[in-house]
Amino acid sequence: MRISSLTQFLEKLSPAPLVIMILVATAFSVPLVGYAQDPYPSQFIAFFNAKECPGGWTPTGNTLDRVTGRFLVPVMPNGTTQDQVETALASGENRTHTHSFSSSITLPSTYIYGADGCCDDSQTSEGNYTFGGTTAASTSEVPYVQLLVCMKSNEPPGSGDIPTGVLMFTAGLDCPSGWTQPAATQGRFMVGLPAGGSPFATFGGDPLAPHENRTHAHSFSGSFTPGSKSLIQFMIWKAWGYGHSGTQNYSGVSGTASTGLPYMQILQCEKS
Image (cartoon, rainbow, N blue to C red; front, side, top):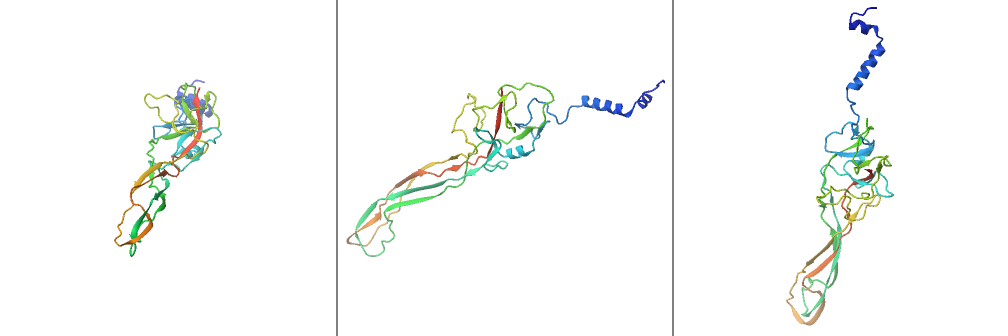
């Protein structure tokens, strides 16, 4: 049979091959929307300076809902991944904390000759005086930046090179093949490397223990001078037990309190 036009040719074909031809052409001519164009494994978590996650990465899910408003800390030995400490930060929040305090002073004794008669009951007695309270709330002024957090949701469509030494968080329980868990970062907040600094240098306190809400205290000191008062009436007699006027010093250590930094401990992997 002679076919004189493209229309006649298509009419002779069954519908199924035509559909297949169109689908195949579409698949190879249009990029895979929603699929990652990077070589990172699924469940990896990264920060992005963007408003939307790239293809193949998602901003939602149980893991990332727990990350919101929290620092990420590489999980420590015997720790549980995705364990949380403190209440998450609100957008732009500068978290405050308070401390309790207490101290005491001892007024030395003095005595007065010729004290008798009326109206010497407004004097201060000798002895030990304690005082305490709670400090006003104050911020810790911890500098931080808010960034979009995304989790890799699809395996990469192809292979690619990832630089050795890249550190990534993962929602998984184990690092994938080709990745290892670094020891130096476990239980520590991470800070961008200052100029002239040494990578993996640790400082500050000991690494956090599992689910630890690290506390701290402050020393304090000061002085005050109790008021003095003159007695007008005199008789030849001696009165004692009065507090001596003059500057009195005090000092102590405040109660412990948490800085209030919310974090989630999560597995970190390093490209080997």
